[in-house]
Length: 396
Image (cartoon, rainbow, N blue to C red; front, top):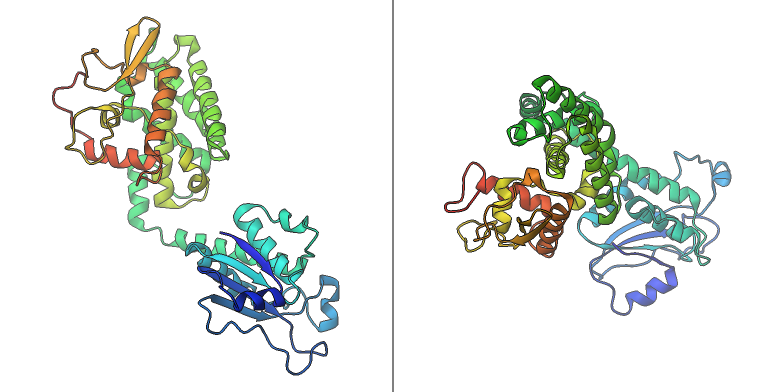
């Protein structure tokens, strides 16, 4: 969303030419008073295909409010209505023009609040010599946007049905009043149950040892997994994900260790479960909406087949990627299609980091500019299509 700042003169010139399409306008004008003659009025936007919010408000500082019989709460009471207008414009994919008398104070204060709220970039307006943002306008708009978000979240949380709560409690043992750590702990336990039969430790272990180390991993992830929701780039996510997996592997050193393929499955499967939990309970604990695009998909048999099998078109979400690892020799691997003459695909639980990250990178690149929102979106759909079935004629 682009946010522009205009004066009255600049916008009136623009109105006489080709006015931008797909634009919402926030127009500030002066309240009635001694500073203008009786013919003064707001800018006339009639006849232009714009979504318009016009408001009369004094261009004054916080210290001057009492002179007008106002305080912070009674000044610019339309801010909450404006916040709703801004949210609707943002959701509809519109750009926003902020306009006031001189294009310096009220309009720039409003623009700075919008940029700060949506993009954490309000400082770009405050440091621009052309503008003198009205700080009361800035804080009123910014506060109203945050309050609108809070109300929306509360409304969404209230809409969580008893059926959603039952589903999450019966599947994970989670209640909506659980802390973030407790929910991650239970999601990790669920991940273990998803594939524990396929975990093979590199050393001999007793049942009690396996249980003890499982608990260690669950506690570790409940403490450290949230760092994956705090990244801003794919590179940062990949780096933190690697650190997390290596730390998990290190937890098992005393009993011979686990392969990277087990660690990734535990981390990625837990992330999948947290998406399901958040979708149903709407806790707001994790920044999934902004970071999900960076997530890795769990590597397991079903979706590995969907990603890498050649010559099958009887599944909607099959990808035909040449990125299933086969052993080349004791120390190396080659990537090929799942069903080939190379022999058996290396089981995902036995993967090392090189084949794992090559698979994730190849998959992510193949899904760019596709109809899938992100790799996890593909994974959910592919898993639902292939789950509990086995391709005929492939070597597993």
